[in-house]
Image 1 (cartoon, one colour):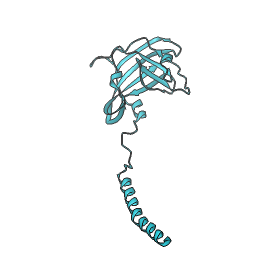
Image 2 (tube, helix red, strand yellow; image 1 turned 60 degrees about the vertical axis):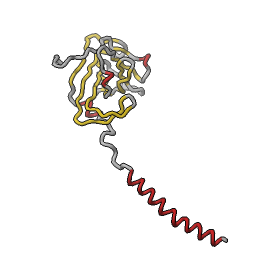
Image 3 (tube, one colour; image 1 turned 45 degrees about the vertical axis):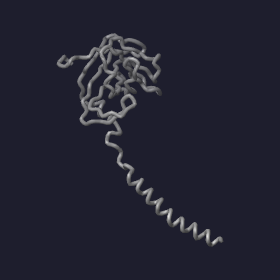
Image 4 (cartoon, one colour; image 1 turned 90 degrees about the vertical axis):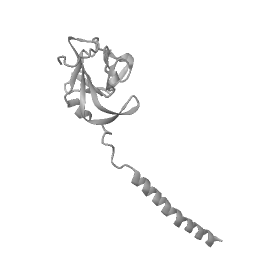
Length: 177
């Protein structure tokens, strides 16, 4: 009886093992070993590439605890389409917007600087070398609208935001930039 069970187990193993290995190899063959080209958004490129200023405000008198002196919103035409998440959906985009808040010096903290337009987060900000600007990139065109209020906070606490008093005034095509 023991010999029968051993032979039966061996026969099952001989049949099942190749099937398992063949199944796994087809799963491995179907796996995409190359990550999508657009997976990582080139933030460093987006921070440096030239943009078209679509709204800007500057003041000589700093305001608030962060000593804000203004903002700039620029439209960036991308050199290639990117697939990004906008409002929870994967979307192919050919433009981005760079929102920069001026003032400071902005302290580098454990909580990231967060740039807002109205009650929507544009993105986590990146400080420049002199800590006089914080910049965030967005692919969501619905955030960039006439009359929007630009603000900044550390972390995503809405109540801790410091607002820039001048609202966004979009420049029309052909206006001086």
